[in-house]
Image (cartoon, rainbow, N blue to C red; front, side, top):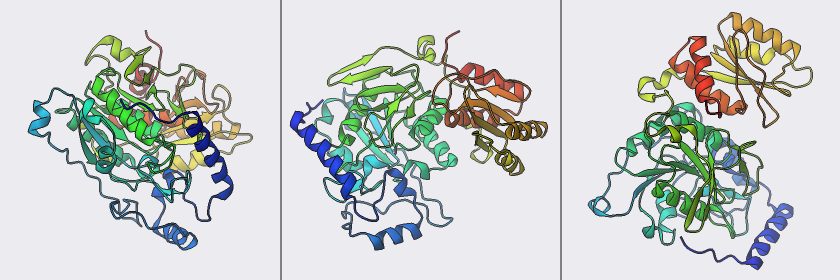
Length: 421
């Protein structure tokens, strides 16, 4: 690993520039990786209001959704070269989906004014120093969008691509925007069938600014995947030298580079230059290869059959209209983000009872950010300490495989919890 060259004064300089940029952000700024998901009309308006320079000619046209036309996703796994096959180094495929990590900033001090999903992954990998010392790396540009631009059908294709790649490669790195990274990571964690390492990474600052975390995160993610240290861990998330399991991790701040945390449980490890430190492991790793992975094999689920699931948020005197609307729209399962240990308002409770009579399955979670919840009841499953957004991912996959309530409940008790029986 290349030794960091940023000393004390460089860090102070970067921090100072960040602070100044808060007061000097130009009009029409494009913030974070959500910018890549903006419609063509919004993009045109922003372009008219800003004097941002044209992106480099090396950057491809952004794959954002325009109207009703879905962006094209590339799922063709590149074959390993003969040299890679003969090499003693691990072979790692980096599958890129865009996000801030692939962001092109207006200038080197534009920490928040940038175009996410602009730089091709092949270019990014080519700029990493000393990568040839840790792995033979190939790339796949699956897409180049902000994370929230991806549909569940896209994530289905992404997961199938990861599994296909791991038939030949020793490990996979997925780059993503951070806005919904915890949902993408958990979807991969539940669906990828291979026991080989899968590492998802991104950044909080674009590739082209001073003090960016992008290159270090990509380099360390490749190093972690190549090491094999997280084989049978499922998908892990690696940013800011910190390794978190996909299950339970959450984004806690919209700007800070140390944004990802796992409430109550903490990280599983860290990367300290050449040393990868693993301090705890998930149950599936303790059980051994092939014994602890979830049952959600996407080869047994049609993309079109992914169950529609939603989240209903509770608050003071919350109405039941959201639940009623979701039910009327044909939603199969609803996660409630409740107050305290999962409580919901009287109006929401009445709407929930009616929806249960119509066959809708409910999962109760807390909106507090951490902690377990009340036990379930008729038509209601406890989400343990899963966040509402991750509970929705699990509920969607459960209902895509089975409509039987007791089966879904048993899967939540098996795959949705962190405790070891």
